[in-house]
Length: 499
Image 1 (cartoon, helix red, strand yellow):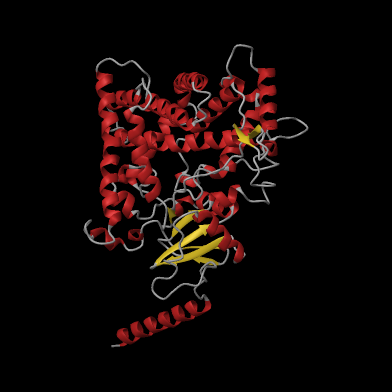
Image 2 (cartoon, rainbow, N blue to C red):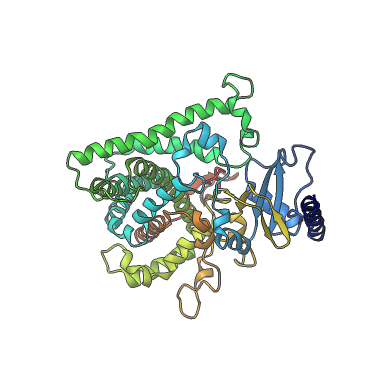
């Protein structure tokens, strides 16, 4: 009997101490946020377009670097400053490397193969390992001839069509040629290539669906079981159409490239290199055909729109600032031998070209909110409670337009990265935008090295070869006199995960 009394006393004492401890340490508050409605919270306040601007506006109004929203029970944490994102996503990457459940993309559209969307775990590690070995800074040097060939084809097309004025198809052709040759060892022989269209079609749906808040099914997953014919279920019809495009993008180029390889295609490619590793066998389970097929599809999809958008933004910036173009051309003329194109060996001697590329990446950030992270366990930061399972959004647009870091942040100004005394790149004057625009932590973009090299070589060659000017048009004055004037540019972008 005495034993039971002692046990009860111990349990009672433990319960009392636990209660006292709980009272001494009350639950921390959530970060500042908007007042919401009962049950649904901020569900109907989450913007479906230009989210990055609205998030920054709310953070500024509440004077916070960490903004909290709650949508139908889902916590959303927006990180509005680079330092906060670095503290959490970089320094605590083991907690912040997950991905939130993306019902539309992965469960309805078939994007579960995508490394960038996979949750943190064993499957993600396999895919990441293969990508890292294929695209690390030293490995991509073997693919530089592919970049050079695609760039020279671009310049020839632009020379032939310079009066057309529509650069976008040419930029798309360049990026498609580059990634198809690097990834699959395939050469594009014609404009309007079916593989280019296949990637564009599949990407269009993914870019739309990846935006948090765009589809209600993300916050109410049970809606995915609603039949496509049901009123208001148009998202199911879109998902079915996009699913077909996604699977074609994964399967068709891989099968075609493998057939060509078996028929004797000698081109160096990621496909060829890794198939040789698979055939050789080994203990690394990352080297399987399933992982390779998925990885190549991610590269194929991910490289096109991102690179094209940055190139187009750079051209806009150069047209708005002819003095920048002239300064760059003078530097190239002083470094590159007559009759030659700039190449990678010239990069250290062409800091202003590097500054232009960096400014293009910063000025019109291509992924303003990045791909959302997910917090695996509850965390504490700056006196706030960050709930487990919260969706974490790094507002990269706000970080790259922070006026405390970049003076006149909405101006295209490559000189912000140049030390006026040495003429060299100086990131103490303005932070390297690569620290934010390619993502954070273990989810940083694995293709960032080849993306940057493609941008640098293309922009350097483009500037060396062509003058870039605003178009001109003829107008008739009220007096009847006909004059020519410069057309003012409109900067119109399609919003989405990639703008």
